[in-house]
Length: 225
Image (cartoon, rainbow, N blue to C red; front, side, top):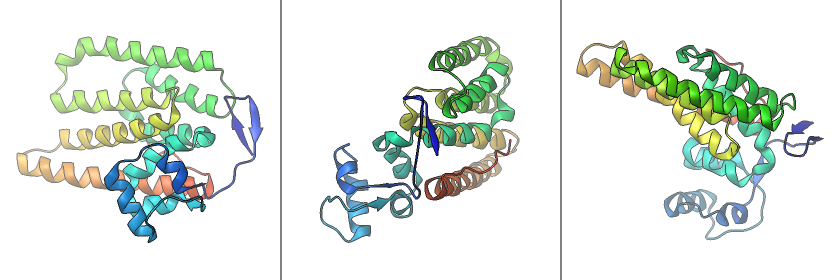
């Protein structure tokens, strides 16, 4: 039983999460991704046969699977909690408590313990915190500033109204933050390039497996900050 913050009611959700090709098609997917999915399924066009979202993940990868979040608004709670989970992975880089508070409120909102007004206020506060912190950006090394900016972006995305878009934004922002943070400590161009590639892929793979767990069981892993 999941809480729906839009209707202020509980509702029964089933897993694994499914959609249909017709549902995906009516939201105008990119041609390349659409053809890749059809080829994987051995089909030539859209239909109403149930399609597990994990199949999209395995066929097209995390990017396209995240895009599909906005075609399944009934799972807004799941998408918001996943966005929060992604942002929690780089919470250590958030140097303003208002960014962390935005995550806390977004999580409470998804679980029916915060109002839309409280969510909006937390999102605004996180935005204002970023503007305030920007005044000291010149004191940061470039990569350090990028890591902190990306971490804030992940928190702000998790508190968005449109949770389908928030999921994609938070995942990418958290990946950027983790990668920038690791690269910042590396010395030498070759080492930085190798660190960037390794960290990016490791972080992306971790998020992919967390998303797989969510869409098949309705659970997200415990956040590791």
